[in-house]
Image 1 (cartoon, helix red, strand yellow):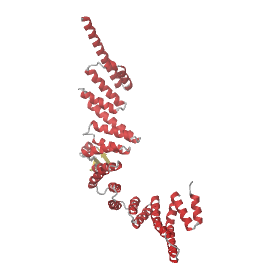
Image 2 (cartoon, one colour):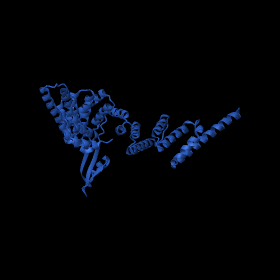
Image 3 (cartoon, rainbow, N blue to C red):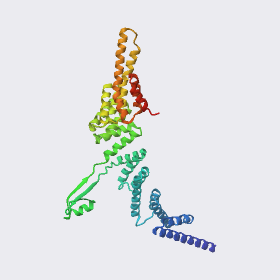
Image 4 (spheres, one colour):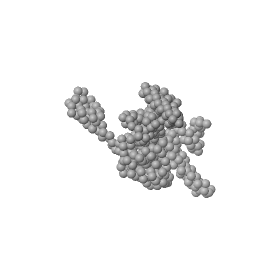
Length: 407
């Protein structure tokens, strides 16, 4: 029995010695820069480490966290660092290691953004935020921006709502002064600024404080809800945002678009006019007013807005086409009356009057369509103009348009 006990003890000592030997070997390889070699040792001795004591197990978890960090497996790395401390692990360099991990995550996210891998960047920046939410609030803001750039609106909304809850403002202060020798303005860190204020090397010290990002966050929440089709929540958010920044053009347009979806054209028109007061040379704003007025049967108003559209932007194709369509709406009533006339002398006289009215409508459309054809050979304009020329008996114009049709 004593021999058996001794044998078990010897095996235990042997295993413990082997575990410590292998973990130290892996740590040395890692410290020398051989990350793969360190990882291979841990993998090859996975069974051996299964029975390791607490100290060796903690060493292994900590080393795995470092290996994952080097391999840019940041989520796994952070989970292992937290598992290390949760199990009672302690290391004098732990705080520095976490700071290093955060820095690596952010630098990797910057690379992702540069390569337009926006969703990857967003998830990394969010991870950097969760590592220290009190200190790393800025990374949550940048995570939201990256998510929007990647059209990942669900996550962007989650991040922006989190920013709203903590009332994130992102206000920063930058510090400047001019060198006495050259007069050139230089930017400093806060600590440098405070030091150099006590010297005679610099003058004209000034601080520049940025505006709060909170209104922008509320605005983006409204825009995303609108993008996702949740009009009720979008309207709630946009009203809050407009209270903070009533002159923001994007917010005005977002609210206007919501009213269009809710079929509240009167409110839409009010907001569009408000938007025009902010941006009076924006052709799209006038075009939208033209569309709404046309839908409401306000043809004269619609015509006025379409004309203003192409006056501001001579390349605005829809402006030309909608204007022509609006003018030709009057044709159906003329044709209906012509078809209802009899053969009396009075009816024939009326028929001739209506025919002239119809031709005048066509003639009004001709210069509008000709301008559009000149711009880029717009096929819809070409075909409409060809039919008008045919009706007016302009064979030369008819053949010219026919030759422009792309089969």
